Length: 283
Ligand SMILES: Cc1cc2nc3c(=O)[nH]c(=O)nc-3n(C[C@H](O)[C@H](O)[C@H](O)COP(=O)(O)OP(=O)(O)OC[C@H]3O[C@@H](n4cnc5c(N)ncnc54)[C@H](O)[C@@H]3O)c2cc1C
Image: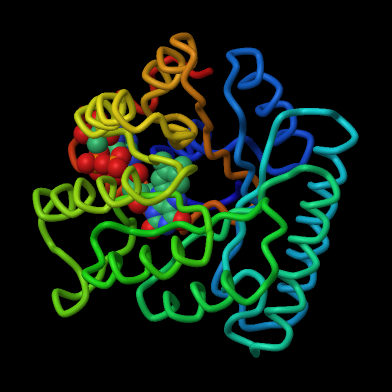
């Protein structure tokens, strides 16, 4: 971590496990002690050079080896633009297929993160194209107006969804702009999941949403995982795990920490949250 001001570095240190695979595995072990599963994400995105894509794919495969060898309970999350989406469809599909195959061998779920709206159609297509072998999932963002149709498409094909609010700055033509509308749509999409999907992930730090999901699941009895980001609302994650709920924490690691950290900084919309993020007890 070699750029940025002190506050960005302090926050990145809370949100990101560290630069190496060992750091990621170490973080997963400490989460596992609290009965929390890790979703490990090798940082890197928007690659338009083959060398970068190849290095990312090699690192992700190495990570999967390390997960298998260490026996930690962890899955991985990857991004389309990290695997070659900006270079060509063939390479992208080949890279993703390789990672999914490796995951299936080792019992590791491979999550496809969702990026900016201009990549959503391709990301959903990629997800549905590659045989899923029971161990892949895709992120859907409630701030996008199109998401109900993507959710129906993925669910119809037996895919597994991780529902989030959405982290990028998107235009009004495609996305809800206010937190109220985004949260309102989260409830609509979550309701759809409870009615139509057996297994999914509610990925949010919004306690009201989590409480609503817990209540809905008393009626529906679905296989629900609650997921949060490393360094945010750790106490809530621990409490849910202690009550016997399935919990995952998304843990980024690697050297390319700036885009991820800026997305988090933008969300921590007031100083109180920034300070809380720095000082809140980790897991
Ligand atoms: C497991 C997981 C995977 C994700 N994957 C993706 C993805 O693939 N694509 C994508 O676009 N987005 C992804 N996100 C991010 C997501 O879209 C939101 O940007 C992020 O979770 C903040 O929204 P929220 O649901 O927590 O609700 P908000 O309404 O934004 O926040 C609810 C509360 O959480 C706390 N909080 C939220 N953010 C912060 C912060 N940075 N610092 C301190 N406190 C905070 C605050 O107390 C806030 O009031 C993911 C999130 C999670 C948890």
